[in-house]
Length: 176
Image 1 (cartoon, rainbow, N blue to C red):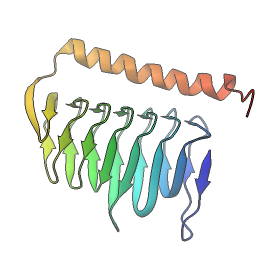
Image 2 (image 1 turned 90 degrees about the vertical axis):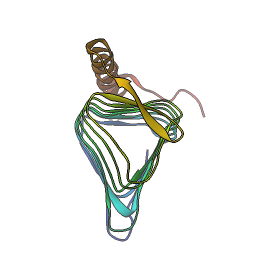
Image 3 (image 1 turned 135 degrees about the horizontal axis):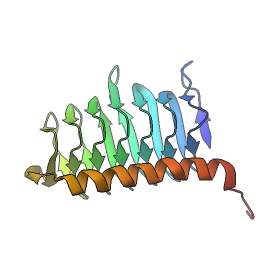
Image 4 (image 1 turned 180 degrees about the horizontal axis):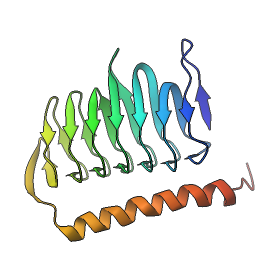
């Protein structure tokens, strides 16, 4: 993994977290325990700070960044899909999901157990209430999240937590 200090600020990463060697983490970034950060992910804490809570996963090619003097906060058990972009300041609450290729703009909030659907764009300053699905460009609320979806998201997040542990013990480079 490529970890970089920037202007005296260094990433802080829990020992139980897996960071893929092709991920890039810069500056003021805090990543909690049992997280997974996939190949090609870029987490830039150069202008603002990035906080990623317990058990969250940042999938392949996702980008997290924050404007100067701001914070992008991802609480616990947040799922950030492949190629998503999260741009702070923002607050992504517990058990929220950001779908593949979705974009979270500055000043946004995604509440507990909510979903920003794949490919959707949440415009600056907008929010998604608890247990809601937002979809489209610009993202609009389309329906409530039912118990089955809540359970499916829990299972997906748990799978990435297990994957982090499996990668820590079973991932080996065999050729370059």
